[in-house]
Length: 121
Image (tube, rainbow, N blue to C red; front, top):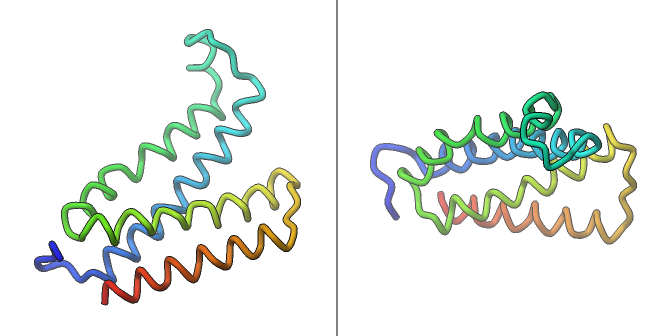
């Protein structure tokens, strides 16, 4: 393990929080895609698309910090939580439906991420 002074569970927690921001990025990409075109200048004025870019880029320095302070095999799988938040956000803001198979997949992701987090302790 690469860890020095930083606690592995703290790194896992930070990365888990970053996944929420990335999920909002995905939500805004979806919302901004309604006005998508190949015209770069139009896209720079597509505020929903630009919010998506912002929410994708904002976590990057913190993610790099996490990679510096913990094993890639611990940090990277935590990103799977993004799928959980995207499912919840798409349900809430886009009216998308979840079925039992999607919920089962979400449960599997949460269990898997919990196991990775536990292994970091």
